[in-house]
Image 1 (cartoon, rainbow, N blue to C red):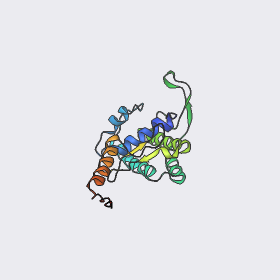
Image 2: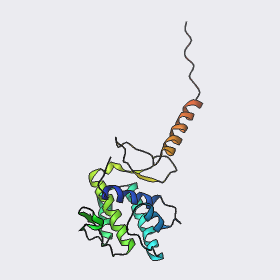
Image 3: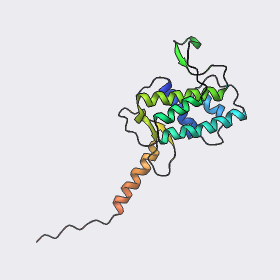
Length: 175
């Protein structure tokens, strides 16, 4: 399924932030995600983005209007139309000169809000017990339950093994 840039790319950036290791270099994560312009992520901004990541995690656990509105209100969002880099007019939710943490917060909040408004059931938390990873379901049928094939396979193998080790009921003897 294809989403608009905010419902797709921004929501995917939220996924990357939530699933990131606590000691991951956030500037590298943003660059890897294609977020521009990155610049320097100073210690204060990194701390704020890590706090923000905790807030984003809540959306994947229990997405809802009130929570998303609270996230949007927490940002310094000022929507405006941009035409940078020869691209067609498109919306930005923070000024390019704003600090990186403010831009990322506005971008991810808007992305998750847009996704929630168009396809709320596409915001997911892995269904494998013990896995805390999140995802945006871009599958064709919208029935994704796991963060990865690996988690899906682990659940399916465990289910198969549980069935295989159950004692089989003997069929009644025929007279």
